[in-house]
Length: 325
Image 1 (spheres, rainbow, N blue to C red):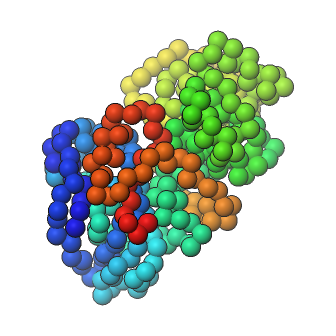
Image 2: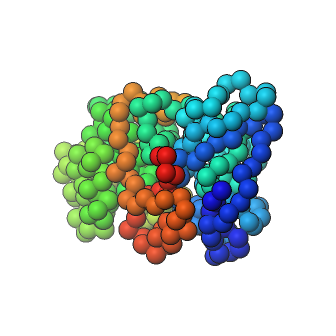
């Protein structure tokens, strides 16, 4: 079978490997679509957050079809369409454990979630990043059509926030300098866009909110300056959810706004415990997340997909897929 392997820091190739066998509690899966994440690049560069070893098969954003189940597996059968969580205890699927970047791969049954027929293979491979955006809207406390939300940053996670918030009826203002990403945000339901690098950014948000500021702010860029600006675009008693990750960065912030505006702020990491809800939400609302995928390659050319991510920073989400997808 063909498999994408990271073989050493900065070195990767599509190699021919044997199809893996399964244990009694495991499932053999045929990959259908796999997304590339910034964390995959960190893995390739040898600086992932937990220990791992080379060679390793990446792939933690994926959809797949069940081919074979172990003798103790009762919840799945061949032909089932599934996605899988990537944080399993102390292990990370696709990082410390080889992942989905191969024609066939193995997972334990209790890591997996079935996806309904109206969720495509592409949509399935977007469940992992979308679950983070969906979880942010859950943590925003009763987000609904009465809210006006500012989403700072339209990367894959920020765009997931846009889609989830818009599907909940929220008025969404996306703050993003890239015209291409703004266009995707608008396809996903953003009502209006502003450029956060503009000198008039704060004034524009005030004008768009009738001088009140946003009732909810989602910081999805991970940039310290944006983290600080979240306090300024927030309205009185607004809820702020910090999603973007920056460890060690700093920027001046008007911390007195926490008190004067009676703000609520929280940070989140990942999407713990919400995968079943995320899948149900996608299926029920009919959100089309496919605009996030800006390039697709055959699995046999997964090395070219990695090269594209490394060289072209304009890409939002690059997928590689099997012939059956």
